[in-house]
Image (tube, rainbow, N blue to C red; front, top):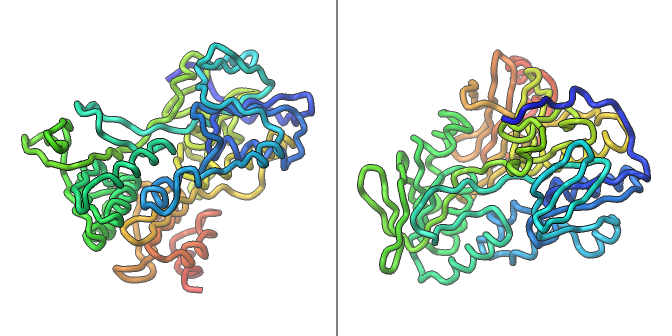
Length: 416
């Protein structure tokens, strides 16, 4: 953890036309911030720095559409040439940020150049967590190039090839679903007792456990992989008990880590992401948003310091930071974390930021389609749904303000 402390409610200072905002990270959060600043009538300079050579693109379709063969990888773009021109933003793509001088808000880049601004927004997101494996033929899925390579590899496999997916979480399940749709034999290797037990808790993970089999996917729990090695015509997944598994392709989906290492000497507080205040400010003039930000969230049970890797939070962060910097005023509406996962032919959705050890009560549906409440200290902390999108949307108010479980049952918004 880097020494220092985040700004405690940065004084409200509105941007002027003489300001220059440098946005580091050309993903959803970074691009939405550019758009948000222009919507807030900021007329100063904006520079958008991105490590990848591609203009901003959307990541959820990589696993949901590209891997299934429905979209080409370049169909995921968020910013056309016309969009970039309209936003009057200078793009610095294909060059990573290597350092941040907080004192003069200057971003140093891998090509030896630097971009000096009056404000810097860190939106560098996360990268796929990697395992120390012998084979170099193992795939991960995080970037557009990752998706293109993996889709091409799946296309090249003989029909009904065995594909091993290490990790049964959200990304692993979505990859397995795409593999099965393509007619291959997906085998999910989960280290825990059940997929998602560390995220959604024991009850919900048990309710979801039958889904892979219904989609023709093999799920193997309590599988501890120690290596993947090259075979003659395939790869061998080696387990800690000494056994192994042959597969034509191996994909690793074991989570992600924040891209904050380039800030190691900046003096910002780094603790599982860049620590920021309720306005997403780390120190005056420097903010962080999206997956890389560890921010103060005013949840239904009070303030929490959280880092949330969800599309909706990144999108909302951009709008909130743009409004704060442009006007000096916070957004009045509460931020409600939301995410979804399309897997095994159905959709899982979660509102709020529940903990895996929260109490869970199923309030609607059956084994195929249901909605449940998470609660802590008698207060609703989250809502989770399987194939119940309308009921979940109607239940959003339960986590917008403190709501007791008794009141939630009385209101029963999911039943409207």
